[in-house]
Length: 152
Length: 152
DNA sequence: CCGCGCTACGCATAAATATACAATGCGTTT
DNA sequence: AAACGCATTGTATATTTATGCGTAGCGCGG
Image 1 (cartoon, each protein chain N blue to C red):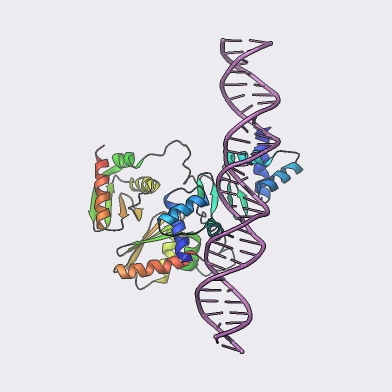
Image 2: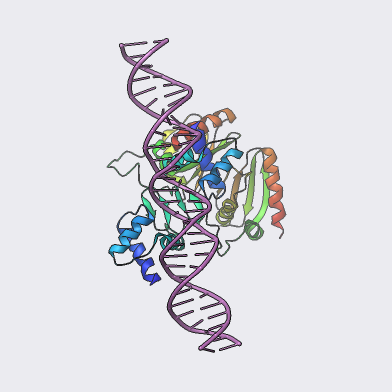
């Protein structure tokens, strides 16, 4: 249940400003997720969110955590999603991955490198990656898998 | 005296992490600047600092996203569509907006800024914006709405 | 089945941050 | 000069966020 909540938090955050944890709590409740402020405080810490003028905001991607070690292997998709991915949404046979600004291209590249069989193709803009699957079932599948990578 | 203090704050912040306003107060005192936490709260607001894991940090460039205070308004989607949009077509859960050459990126940006709830995501090429909706109904909806913006 | 270690969570409360209010100082206007 | 507007700050307090502690559920080796 926690993962689902963390995702909902990202989603709420990227669609409307949130000024306080209590406001977040109310917004989540409207989505059927009911928790206390204490839990949100912990979630926020875990998601490494920032609070600034205008409320909470998603980590600006670049916060160097997974990849500052000496390594030549091209970064894995999981790492990429972990550091750039903000949210994953699915509609019909498509999956849309929202990333930090400028993060879409590298994510898509990592994606292509892995060559998932249930993916027909992908396109990247500036902060959005679009993934096309053969059908809805597969899209749901892919979305789920990607979502687990969000909460590294 | 205030300007000097604001500068000192920036300085302290960029040289060592600061976890709380009270810590900031102590660090400033070592530099001969003595104020209360209340004043710092106001300063921090004015400097638009963010607090995240690892303490306060300077505004990262201008990641103005959730900044809804009161800015010079970025161009609205309606204006954008009005000036760049050429045609709007819809298929299944997708909407394709044709724009003048080079107009797609700005239109998509404006689009994202408005954050329509019935839009899963959007990607822009050179003269085409692809919009993904959750389902066909929503796509028709969006298409209609956009079309009214075309003939401004 | 029991006990153990672990994670997620709520409750109560401590700690941190924001703010209502009043005081002070400094130009400007009358 | 008196009156006023405005900016800056401290004090006291309200609001918001973090956390210590206790409970519940869960997988696991005995």
